[in-house]
Length: 139
Ligand code: AMP
Image (tube, protein in one colour):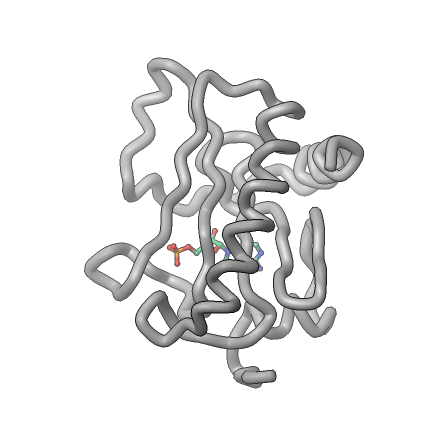
C-alpha cells in the first residue's frame, strides 16, 4: 500500500500519532478534525497515500464514499445538525492544507455563517474525545 513517511495522515493511519478515531476498515480511516468548523466535523481518508483526487485510485474513492456515508449518518444522529456538507480540496488555491486525499464531513447549523475557508481554530480535546465516543456508539 502506498504510504508517505512525511504525511501526517499516513502517520495517523499507522498509529504513530494519535487521533480521535471514529472508524476504520481495510481501505479507509475516519477521525475527528482537530480544528472543527462545527462540532462533529470529521475526516475520511483512504489508508493508501494519494495527494489529491487526481492521484486517487477509483477503488479507494469508492471505499472512502461508503465510509463517508456510514460516518456521516452517525454524525447526523449524534449532533442532529440542520444540514451537513461534504467538502474536498485539491491544491492550495482550494485551501488544501494536508496533501493526503480526504473528505470533510461538516455538520451545519442554520445561520452558522460558515465560509468555505473556515480557518483552523483548535477544538477542545476533552470535547473532541467525548464526541468521538458518542459518534462511535452511533455507528
Ligand atoms: P484541508 O484544508 O481540506 O486540506 O483540510 C485538512 C484538515 O485536516 C484541516 O481541517 C485540519 O484541521 C485537519 N487536520 C490537520 N491535522 C490533523 C490531525 N492531526 N488530526 C485531525 N485533523 C487534522
